[in-house]
Image (cartoon, rainbow, N blue to C red; front, side, top):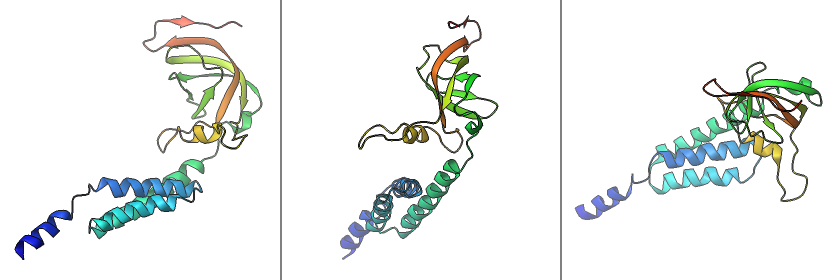
Amino acid sequence: MAVASLSAEGAAGRLAWSIPAVFGVMGGIQLGLGVWWGVLTLLLGVGLALRDARPLLAALALLGAALGFGAERLVTGRADPLAPWLGAQVTLTGEWDGQFLTLADPRARLAVAPKPTSKPGRLVVSGRLVAPEGQRTPGGFDQAAWLRAQGGVLLPTPTAVLVAARVRGSQAEGGCGAGSGAA
């Protein structure tokens, strides 16, 4: 009899606490985005915790879902700092990381097309500021959704695309090299 209770106890508690928490957070974010199967992700986290006979982990998954939902609402609820300039020809100066241009004022990130070949560092670029395109065809690429996925709570989500971009000047990280694009 003692052997049976030991093996039953040994089976409980084998699941890492982070697994239900992560499924909870992912489910909360998906629900915040309006993705119905976020419920399934959340239920998977709760179900794994309950299967492991750890109701506190199930509560952690639910707490993670609430935090994920709240974080998603916080990120998507921010006002777009670039909205007043959408559609305008602009010249912007910011920090280029090889993927996105980060502006200091207003605090914003944006995609640049065509993507500059400049090394990461300070970049001056001009072009027309536009809102990202959504999904045009079923199963097609959704640029707006992809850009939303590139941000976070601490890192601003890219909200605009600078099209017909021309590099006017750049300074690589480290401060020495300066180049300029054609005018």
